[in-house]
Image (cartoon, rainbow, N blue to C red; front, side):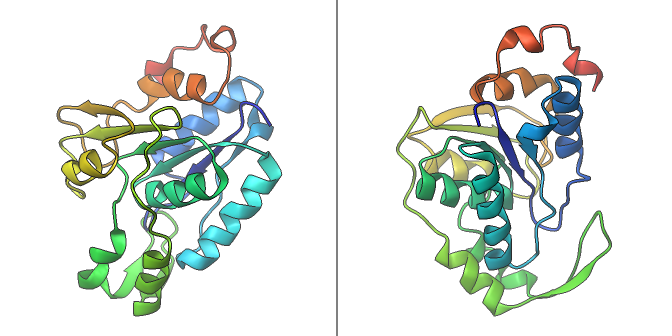
Length: 202
């Protein structure tokens, strides 16, 4: 489906996150809700990838929009299926970062509690792919003020891709709504549809 989008949230996040809600609102206003999926991902990577594979099958060839850990998932799936991906402060090799996080976890939005195990880490490691080399298929949006991930890791890993690096900001990516026209354009949605929307008011 041309102009379809699959939004992939991050670690301990949910469809209720700010970026996801802003994207949902815009697609609703454009009358394109059917072309958007924002699944509530299972905390286990194998389950999450299964959910995302199903959403890709439903949408055809969506633009994958991945935030944080969702960026890692999006990269794996974009390489597997030859899809376009827009990554927002993506995690690089998250399995190497999670050793200190093993144990009880709580979803920031749903209050669901769960246990991060070595099996989660192993499953994440299985999804690793070589650094993408396609500047046409990938946009990577980074903010240097990301307090959770060092943006330089992504800058290095995705150096062959189209990088957009903004000074300051944070892990949630400040000003995301204002960048949505670029996202919609990358998804193949015509600018004539959204010229009248004030994105800064979202």
